[in-house]
Image (cartoon, rainbow, N blue to C red; front, top):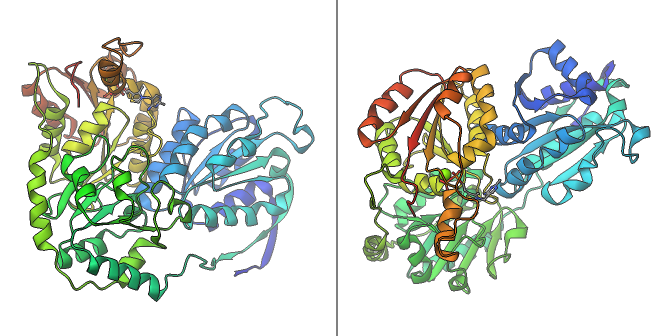
Length: 538
Ligand SMILES: Cc1ncc(C[n+]2csc(CCOP(=O)(O)OP(=O)(O)O)c2C)c(N)n1
Ligand SMILES: [Mg+2]
């Protein structure tokens, strides 16, 4: 129910800012342009919403996603029309697949120019139809507030995700009645029935070898604590997806690792060995091994009805909020016998070994783990070998240590802007971005954003001179024909200096600790460029 009192007349541009304020938005990420100058003028005059100027619109969206992940709030982005709008698309796809709530406000040419190939016109709403929860075009100022509130509701409910609002230029100067709206949205989320809960309880009680797969959904529903309590009581073994990392303490004896193509053998084997797989918000996409073995034994719990039976056919499922569901079930069976049997599988996990005297990624990450294990840190990573070494060697044992990775789309260029969003969300928090030489070059222009906002981000470059992940595939599939995967880089230390950022190069193991001491000695952005064995493989 929305109630309203009409108060005063304002411009459309101001109405946008007022609507954002009503939605408790205090930070936006963006990049201005001619079409949206009126909004930027209002931001300037109002001064109560902080604007973070990124150096590319894609980064603004990734940063807003990092902010949303860090705060559990909705990220907001403002960009101009045409190229400003189209530059957001990669970021939008990323947030859509991984399920983080964003509102992206794009400028649009005037009503009378739409469809004429006007200067900087792009039909962004049609372009993002398949990667947003909704896309609206506002052609009249009277629709501003209602559309923003609706967009917010859509972005933040069910499986969360991005909503685009395309703002036709004319509305900014148009006047409109400012309304004092109270946003209390009716909760129309799925209701969980008693028979749903009984079905889950019965499936678990009838099982001898159950397994919980903790997916990204556990994070989304903030079900970490409830999950831990259930496992404490029942000793059901737990594995996680990459998006679910950190949702269950990795030092718990009932944790058996990460599933997936690059996951742990113990975790993947458990998918086969178990007789019931309880999926908590996992999507079982094509990067998950052994999907066929799940046939007939999968119990899916997901807020998104589209996920049910999408990748593995199942007739056992509950659509709803994971935390709500887990809080309501009662299991009086102890699976510690089964969990003990599972321990033996841990021996099958691949050992990480040095092949040369050069620095190896895993020893760098292990050193970082060792150095930071008692600190509350948000990690981000990019995409490639460095990401997999990162998730394999960092430990997430409590909710003060988190990791943000681009899961569903594997977007190189995500990690640094996501770190910016996380750092902006809480400046007292130290953020560590672990990146590759290839990925870093996709968003290194954001060093300016880090410097300008005095962000406490430590950037760790695992510099192997290659697009290593692809090179590794070529080694096996193309008989070592490394087509276009050797990649040169600038002198990252000199580059950092040109941005006013301190940096150091590390070539051998003894230099790691002093470099970390230097990086963590203050709250500034700092870069460590690690020279890594180029031929290392996972
Ligand atoms: C935007 C984008 N382009 C291409 C790819 C394909 N890709 C996946 S991993 C990778 C190599 C990444 O290189 P680097 O960042 O140096 O990491 P490394 O594997 O060497 O650790 C590439 C090109 C991608 N994931 N994202
Ligand atoms: Mg590399």
